[in-house]
Length: 254
Ligand SMILES: [Zn+2]
Image 1: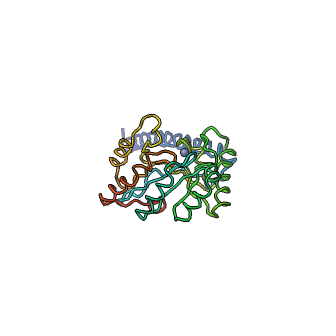
Image 2 (image 1 turned 30 degrees about the vertical axis):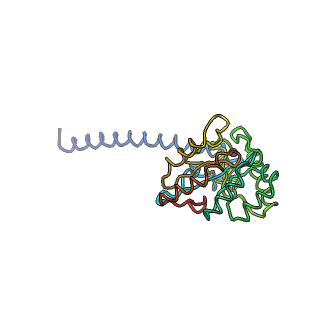
Image 3 (image 1 turned 90 degrees about the vertical axis):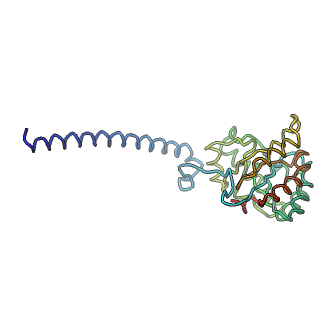
């Protein structure tokens, strides 16, 4: 075999190998394109492609570079801890973060006005607290916009741009529809499980759960509608601040 033939054969082998690799890579990228296209086409009825990224991000944690934690208080029913939460926030000179339903805004207008007047943040927890994953796209939009108009007509403030899905029930479709409506999902880092009080969860257990997770950027989920939150909040804030952490609102901490 001449040297030239040898080089030719090697070159053909290399090219073939390259071709095989390139075919494989191409078909991989084709399947990715197909997946992306079907994601887009399934959502294209309600979302323009400019607002729909390849993945929609939600907030599950604040800034991890600072010794700061975020407490969020969800409200959709009863308000046992509301007054205490507001008193404790005032005592510690803090801005709080509330995710409220439209129904709660309607049922407790004085409380909601107080929350706004004190400079706390109110975001969207839907109107009627449904599992958004079980609703149509239009129903999801209606839940968000109805809460929004209810709050706006009472306080003149908008709950945009954040919402929290009731029960944490959300998927890509819910996040996509919410994004189209101008909302980003805020989940949580630690569920304090204060809402499990009726199932036997104690104040001591909730307090321990909170204090054992004080790390930079932790977002805590607590509720207005249980008694544990009001009972432990002052102690919890005092302990966390004694550890050199600041308690901040959502917009301050992300
Ligand atoms: Zn809720």
